[in-house]
Length: 214
Image 1 (tube, helix red, strand yellow):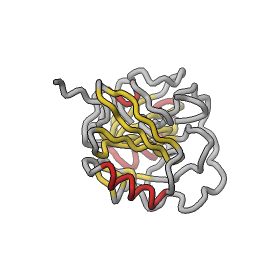
Image 2 (cartoon, one colour):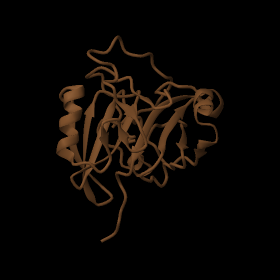
Image 3 (tube, one colour):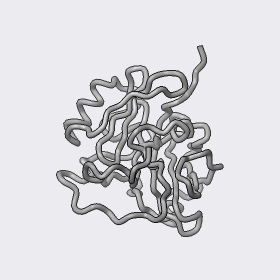
Image 4 (cartoon, rainbow, N blue to C red):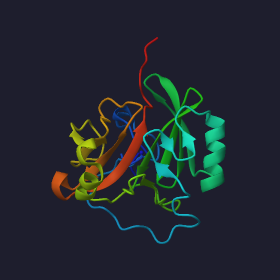
């Protein structure tokens, strides 16, 4: 979760950056990549249900889990969120990956299965921002202090791969998720504003662009 005002991807890592080490390196449509100068204010009251009951989880989004069939996941998310505003397919690690976006949330699908998501604060102003949080009630715009308080030693900083933001952002992982080498477990994200006073601009989970070889 290309920049336009946006992100996801996760990041990708749209995406903020809807992931995603690989997600960030091959940012999907809908993932913010323009320079980030400051965390913007929330949009006005979102239409419908702000978060639709979804949860940013290391294995999926509440009622839909990674590994489930693409058609079923898309049907469920569309029932909860309405029709997506963006749907594209782009190569990722030598295979096609489908990126489907609802406002600030991008889900990605590879090999006919739900592979991950990116949630971010920078996205095209074409639909409301979804207010979705983790099971620990941490969401976009959370402070570094809130992250540390919620996750303790489960939270760690990681080296920052190229993100396309144009200014410094810091990468973090929960339960060992490393944006430079994404795994099917844990959550990752980006912080804008430094490791002391920064705010979360992206959350992502999953493994969209892994080259498993021939």
